[in-house]
Image (cartoon, rainbow, N blue to C red; front, side):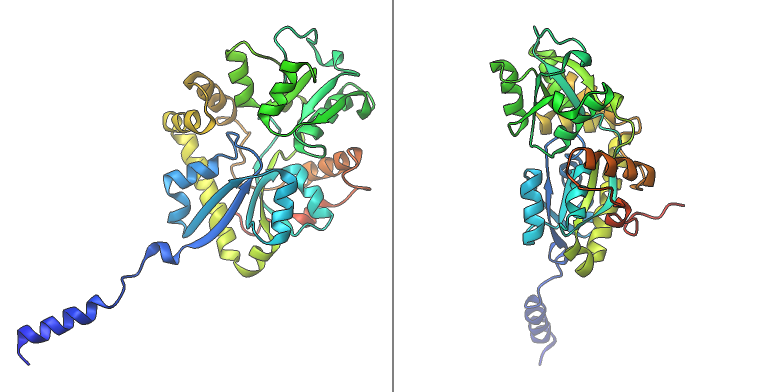
Length: 321
């Protein structure tokens, strides 16, 4: 065979071998978040930056309610859940998920707003009034119960109505169906900027001991693909670290992701990113978990005090020097 013919045959043989595809090697993860707020949108930011891809993951994100999220984890269609600390109560009831990283601390991302001309100007005026929350048993519901606790009232002295998403909660103020509403801080700043609501209190100023948001992994994923859990947690903290170091770029992302003005996006970033709202190491505080268990009993999410440390783990956290 001539050298020319031999090279042609070699080329033909090599052309039949498909090149290795980095995307094909990536582990697919179905990730759900309970809200499109600044904190949980860090998963979308990580996707935009390519951080998850660089850690060998192909992450698909959906937004669903807490109840549907728990059902999806049970059904096996969700691998990672970005949800409130209150979701730990469902783990204690048998939901097959485990907290793998503390996401954010005191609920500084939650704000109580009232209508612009509302006669309610302080917390002590909320007694026997109605507050709109997302769902009963949710983080927004729990936050309102803490107002009653702070004011030394029975929890039932503040009526809560479950209306769903942020838009629906804001609508209750406009129609007068509720005297106040719990919304995320970006929505609150946006409403305030347009003169459509007044901020009554930031729950982060009211509640010191709480694990506001947690990264959960399904127990099935933990058992069968522990390295994927580890990679997700690692990529998450790489993303938040990047966001902390790149203010202008992150504000621009938040503006588009949250659908707010540059002024609002800047205020949200300045309120949440520089301080201690975002966990830098993902570690759970046993003292905080104890306080959360007691609050779950008060809300009737649990019948008795439970050791919540058995429903979280630190084995997937990045190692610190």
